[in-house]
Length: 423
Image 1 (spheres, rainbow, N blue to C red):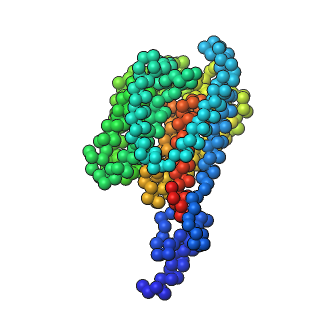
Image 2: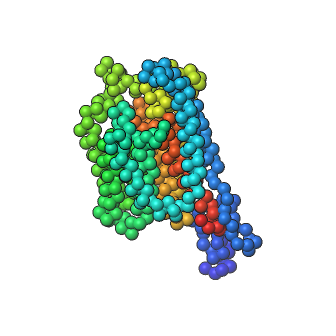
């Protein structure tokens, strides 16, 4: 085709793609919107800015969570078990963790993705060391029969939360390194499976099957997004399902949870393993469409256990009704979709590690929120997973915000590249 004949086609392509045609006629792999290189001939500058809507959605969830943690925990001192606490005890501690988490997020945002990639394996090994330390008597802190925390002065840190983030970084780095052998099962998947299995053994020793499920899904998601073929992916999924099924079958109290989920209102289960589920459903049922109003929950008055952590959504449902629950779901859906979009944009710019990290964070937040919401709504068996960014839990808030800060950094670097700058 002659140059004169191709000119109208090039002009049409330029209109469709918002001017994203290079001087050589190549179309860039992503749409840059209104961002265009200045035709001044000056050297490209480093891009400024970040995804502000993602920041504001995160802040909205954090602030709403702070209010709901206070609402759900204000009556806890009336229970003799918490008599030494003040009505603002959990509010103050949650606010302290929020401040520390925001500082941590600001620091994480300053770290280039190239540094995170170099540190992926050392951070993964550090998280393994912490998971071993938490099992050592007098080092790990036991709460409700589970050894999951390490005391750091007046605060407690949960290494399993850090493990979610480090496994994500390690899996993304692993897929980049093994990109050339991703079609070969044993060379591509077995080493990654062994690493996740090590984490799983340590988590099950705490025990914390919920965290292990989240980590397994994060690793699976990154394998899938990294290009592992469908047969291999479904084989791994089948192995994991069988493994989790055997774990449940081998544990009497886990079997009891499943049976309670199937029939929570029976006389045997309603006051035993099904107690939390039945009171969660009562709370959501009382809220109806518009809720009973902020602070008006009855179930939080020491009827619903762990109302400020695992069952915070039930209190939201009682006080804000169906409208409040749908709003929470909508905010998480938007957040996950936006982070997936940032990841796809990074991959289109040939930044595979950054893209897999952003999409891995989306899988992590989306899956954990889905499990927590499913448990609160009676769609899934009871599992000890908190609602990301909203439930009370300091180390979870800290790591969640650090992960979102890394996604924002990925977006900032994407913008820099698209504006002709450097990262």
